[in-house]
Image (cartoon, rainbow, N blue to C red; front, top):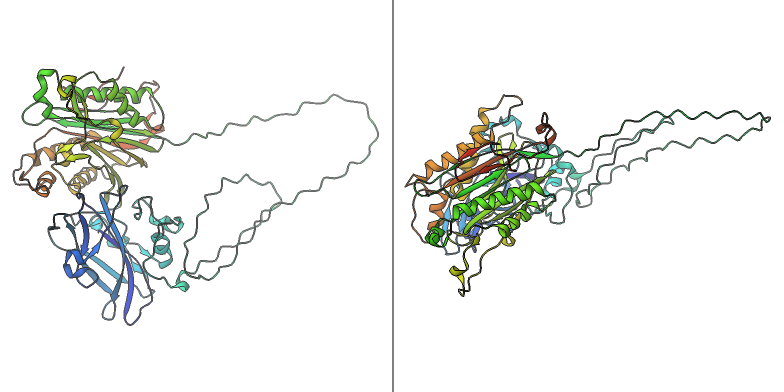
Length: 566
């Protein structure tokens, strides 16, 4: 589902107000708007510009979102199905509708005024994917008003409801200054629960308490009733020191040294993650493969050489070799350095130290603890996925950097004779977009060149990943081979590239720019799949301190730990 309900107030004249949040992942151009439309005045009677306008911003894109308060007529039934669709209002004045049947959001109001709700889910434009297809309806959570009020008041830094929050921890989420409730909750229904009475600590040995969890700000609600104040925990009283009693003087005796019991050191090692990665690369039907990649347990990258540079081959320009050198230099830098900006610094070092002439897009990512730093220049990209009860969910994707249609940002190194006195300025590594991903064990990162995303939509990538993962369900302790995931995605994109009638992302992008390029786009295709695993588990049985780095050289198409960087 692309929408989920939150709270409902007391009925008034047979109506209740339900807060509904819509989220959709959709690629747009500058000046485009995204609307949600449906029946009724609130949703514009299926007229795009009269519907509800969604919003986005630099950190949230390509996800568009909004939260509205909807009056629901419960005079005849408390089970309501609301139909709706997303529409892109293009800057040129025309509307692009989702294909297929209308989306449906079931709304069920219980007698205790709680709303049967759905877990947060980001829809993909044009794909009505139901998260409950792999989940029993009985598992759908019923959220109380106080719980959902807290949830609605908590937002990520991008201004969206967090898709990463566990439903079990919703009441503990902190209040954000961006939080806005679009309806007026009834104060008496949001009355805080009494705090359980705390036990006094006896005058015995007092154990050292673990660090207290961070204080969570409560959600502000209109004049809630005050609950009983918690009692203070009684601290042990100090035992009075007895007065010394005068005793007769005695001859001095040797003092025995106190017996010291050795204390075992506490292991304070912080949990750290690493990559379990694999890759697959396919060449276009004609011409050389100009993609390159690398991966290790701590970093990964992809590069896509610009084929049009072949026209300058007489000057020594070779885009394939240039992309390959960028990946080798990036891998070398990441292997020999440390710090939280390794991804960006690796790309900058590769740009400065390259000796080959050519042009290429580039993406480098490096993991440090539980954070993955990403530097991306051009239209290669990444996708961050996390397993949910209904399948994998896309948490974040990179955004393409282009100067115009099919003209991505790119690192360029050419002989001076080609651009002398031309006034041309080239993109550089400092122009790249930087991302910081907070990962968890079991997350999946996909790195790819545009041969994948020009031929497959996001929801198609997601469906293929789910299909591969489902094959391994029930096999305890076995991780889905990352090279198998990469191979399946690459081959699926290759098949689509030969379909002259397919409605591919590349064909859609061409139409938006008043160009006619139907079907798939034949191109080099590279996919690197990396599971997030615990570093301690991954290093079991390994005693050497070298880092295995797999390079996608000009000859190697598919690999998994096949080459060691010296």
